[in-house]
Image 1 (cartoon, one colour):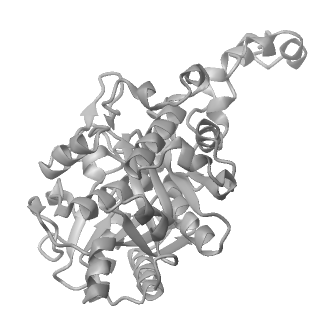
Image 2 (image 1 turned 135 degrees about the horizontal axis):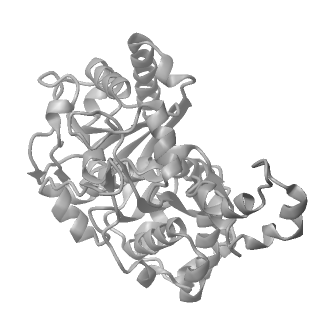
Length: 419
């Protein structure tokens, strides 16, 4: 395959509970530090982005007053990814109609903070007086109240901030959107529809409504350590996807090749039997490997979601055991920075890329709660100079999304060609 045909992630950037600077992420990840904390006002563990000065990475500072925290996190992470990819504003301005944005989207706010005008319009029988609402109460909405409810706000703002006038759209697939956006960018470039994309996803701190909905589904982790479930967090994560030849023209040496992308949906995922669910995950794994024309033995490590939902965690573990070799290293990043709802898959992918770029394997936390302990090769401690070449990154969530990417170090591939 020529360098023109090979597509890579040339830059990554993230703001998570572990930090914003790459060195902050590396230090916490390699040392096995979780940054999830309980909040006094809510009985749930949560993860907050630790960086206090997000605005330093927003090109147009005046726009900050119109942006939600979700938008700020997304734009800031895009800036960090562009910086790592060594892409300047002038470089992006050249053939700007071939530079696009595909970004994962999720509703960052519900109806509670827009409820007051409706409450003020209640009549004596506690019904909404729509005549009164239309005459005067609609004016009580904050001027920018609609922005947190538009799923394309973050991706659109990234386009505006950096003048990217190529193909631009949002992926509204809940937690999976960030990984799907990378896969869709890969296919769009292969089809000749663009030459470069900013991709990823962002999520602000969860609202009461989101926590309530997850609690009703029975998938939210309570503060009690013995309770399984999602531990919610926020994050902004971005990736630059482009042909390898473009990255090499700027002397970007640590890019990551996108070898294969597979995306599927599992209807009624929480009602399936254990055998049915495991079969669907196993089939998904095999389809991804088939697209990459790789055998399971050629995968150095697999990064699983292991989000804390027992049925889904078990299906990932059993499918891994059946498809891959007993020696494949099993990784998981969710226990480090939480399940970031709309940015969950993007965060998972970020830590997969980080380990490939810096050639280490981070320990899996909370192993006592993981399925098939003693049967899967969970990473026990940090391994530096790991020598990993190909990494399988998998995401599965309670909404039925399942997406995988196979990643490979370009340094390894170039070495193989020289041999």
